[in-house]
Length: 170
Image 1 (cartoon, rainbow, N blue to C red):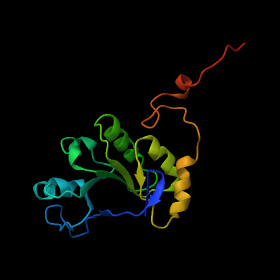
Image 2 (cartoon, helix red, strand yellow; image 1 turned 90 degrees about the vertical axis):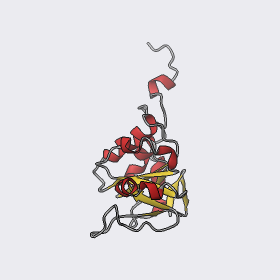
Image 3 (cartoon, rainbow, N blue to C red; image 1 turned 135 degrees about the vertical axis):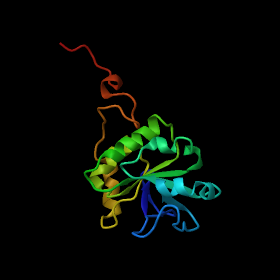
């Protein structure tokens, strides 16, 4: 189960993670809907681009530009959060949406917790795979923790002061 477009839905995608002895060049990519690490995509691009149901995930220390020429091939791109306090994935998502114009599903994976969802949504994530040990129904509530945004971002390009009509105040 994942949260997608503010609803809990079945997840028909699998995330491929490399094991200790696996290499990006030789790992066997299973059939079906699969989200592969960027390194696997780069190593097996010729084979994988023949498949229609392949997504890619970025580690927090990778750059979104590495996918710049391939973005149209993916209906889903995931960003991995290795731990709660690692905020580099927010920048990756914002960059994918605003500078690289990615319009497909953008998914947060890894150490994804309720407290992050509202802010992840602001920078362009539209689906979330919360940590398995957390209640997904509780996590869903995180998307509506706040009713108003002050700052501009992907989900609201105008800051609050530009959206509010003020009267003459003395």
